Image 1 (tube, rainbow, N blue to C red):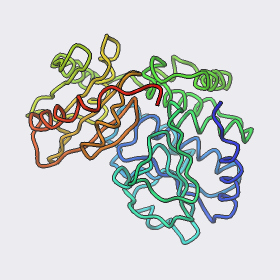
Image 2 (cartoon, one colour):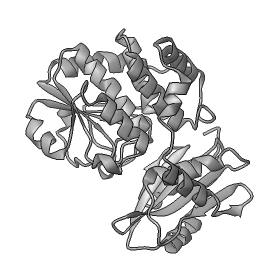
Image 3 (cartoon, rainbow, N blue to C red):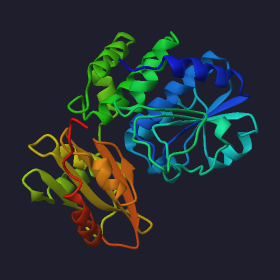
Image 4 (cartoon, rainbow, N blue to C red):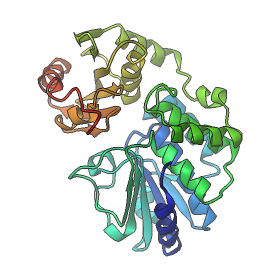
Length: 330
């Protein structure tokens, strides 16, 4: 079972000793990042602490489903921008990172160690923030899984709307419960269903608008195979994609006999993004780290500047094979 006993005790003390709490998901927040942040907001409210969720991106640039969640929840939870963060923070503000542990994936690059808590499921490395509490569990499917366990440990009743959002966070990072699923994951999913969540309602957040869905399918149609189990998708040089569209195209390929899928595309402002997804035999996080990115065994990404999609593909191919298969016994 996920061990959150020490986290529960230490986090409670940190929150109680703080003036306020600011919860920070990663840049370009996805379902898991926004869901775990909203779950953490519930925990802060239990201790009667003023709390805010920092979303540093313009809302219109986020995934359609994430936009829907933010619009749905902004009247119940304080969701602030970067300028408001600067106004709100004090010397005794507790910053809690959800679903992220590295500066390059956040809009805030420096924190006082004693004022920082990390709750994440992505692998840590030498770039990981130094925090007073660092709960990084890469055996968990998602940050939403960890936060739901923590909410249960605090005996907090989960409102149905938040239960659906937390379930969506888990569904995202497990590709609809088809990968990286443990008995803990299923126990927590059951807990959310008992709190009023439904697979149908959580799945509704994944509904694509027509144009985005077409772009994802067009990406999938561009799939090439490096060998019979490793797939690479190259987006069109003259088209712009969202990070979520690239991730969903890579995820889509895992339905087939594919061990790992990489999707490369232009996300605007001269940035080429690579999104990677895998099954059990491949650690795509290791591959992405060699390309200045990060992730874990099942999910990874990187951003490259000053390059083209084809050049990014060549860089990926040079590092992909030496790192691709992992020893499951390690």
